[in-house]
View 1 (tube, rainbow, N blue to C red):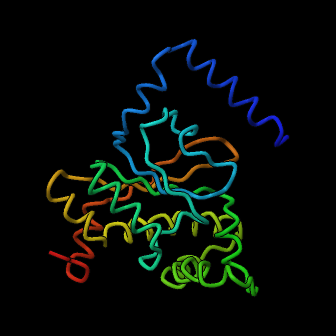
View 2 (view 1 turned 90 degrees about the horizontal axis):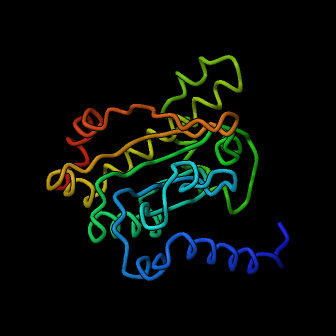
View 3 (view 1 turned 60 degrees about the vertical axis):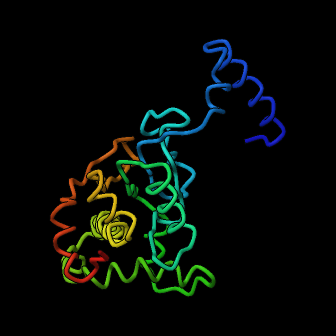
Length: 208
């Protein structure tokens, strides 16, 4: 992308929006009331709003390498707190994607410097599910399965937070796990049983 064209593109976009809706930006400036918090990967091929067909103001977004939700990440915890407690979202989506570079890197035995602590979170997911993963002979299928399992584990990390547990009681907030297939453009619902996961971990992570 030619960096010098960005502001020209922006001007054309602004004019196009105003031609369709003269009050578009005035209305946008009034505030945001998203119903969804989307936690996805920073991969440049996976844009949250575009793959969901969402407009500005409809989705609150957090993106990082491999759509992780570690409890030690102040950014992730702050986003969840703000989205749940202040924006009052009713859905939290963790969306991974097949052919994720972060997941692929975590599957390799290599020293990647500053990335090591981050990728260790994904390697912990592998360790937790190693019997299932090691039983998959095909490397690509094993890689794709780790993408799915990582989404599930990050959903569990979301459920562990006090804000989500409170919102679950107050307004039945739901957590969803999705995967985006970059080869087909398809958005796949992993149909993670949020209620079952909640019940499974409550004995340990209940914060009431």
